[in-house]
Image (cartoon, rainbow over all chains, first blue to last red; front, side, top):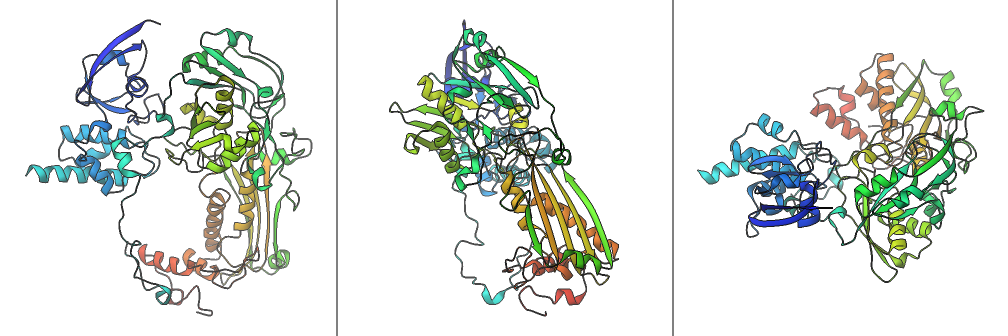
Length: 160
Length: 455
């Protein structure tokens, strides 16, 4: 099968791959590049476990064709901590026990990051809305909502 | 909620170092950084993808299977049918002597539920496996099916599973698990009121975000590493050993990281066939349920029917309780004979009743095999029992919480299955619930104790 070249920035580093046409970004990230932090829970855009950030916007990598990402800037949860220091969202997810099985966590953190990037001090309703595309079957969501609100508070305290 | 420390003060030690203190979970740092390795995060060069051909019928005889077109499909490496599986007929609980073996890894001559695995296709890509699976031709003779437990128990109903010979699990106690305590008919005869109600539930799917699956890699020495999200590591290893007729020393299972289970990942479903595929091809194999398979194929919580007949006195005492429970195993046993048995032990609930009669049936139907899920065998029964308790309280015009205080089991009470009650604490839980919910009860109930007789 003819291969398609694709080149993008992933978590600050340049990536270039030859992929089969029709390969999803989720497959490219996991199987070709080896970033397994986005998870495949449904492969039909309903669970949010594969969420990544493309050019600043939250995207479902299972519904995004890799070849459409040429030249894009992509972020995943595996690239969030810098020099071993956890991002405030990661810290907050730890501190508020917002993870149980952990499968939805990378996608949740991506959705939360896009929210806080656009809305640094969200209301509880805004947090619920921002996470509404991400399914968690363990926690009952409450600790996750608290984690995002906690991270927002930590951010605003650091900024002050 | 405030943690009450006044209960059982004489047996409490509050010099604990860990309990009551927040402690970080050891797995969370991996979760928040995306570093936790779930089974599907393992990738191996040359990995093959396994897809199942599944029965479109609830009950059918297989006249023939033709894989010739599928074999020619580009990318197909191996196609497996029943004859390739060394010990094809198995049952999970055979490890604890709960037989008979009643389920096929790949269907042999017959399918008993819609979605049953018939042929396994291994190919270079997921797409090739899927396309080739669609080219497998299976000729079925459709048979009458039965979906309702009471219909299945009637004489002349279609026989679901020949390995049982009848549509119920035959316990050593007979057609059902039985508990007999006191004289239930005498209890009813002396009761002020009788209330008989039936309760039903549908199957419930666990719907974990990570679907069931495994990745198998040959180690090159006749040993196979199986990365799996099973919740039952050693059950799976031992059953795989039986199914593949391979010593356990050839099977290296890596797991413990489960992306949501809730009981839905305790069946031995994906590992044996994936390891067989790796053995016969010499290549790594992944078998991962699609979301559709997770919802339609993986075992749900069993549908149940619970019939409860109670005799109650005007003063609130339940004097007799008769329970008939039905657990829908679907086409195969898996964990359901155990679930139905748990039900028998669990009734009549956390209440002390002098006359009890319990029958619980594990019934076979042509539905998706059911299995474990959070408190299976007990949870639906609790729903039925507690709704029944509310109805009884209304029947005699009593507060539902006070009604439960009157009947609550206490330490030293003999339970219907003849295990004395120990460490009940039900009274104390209800006292706390009464306060927390602002649902006051009479002072005499707040003065009761689980472990002081007469209080």
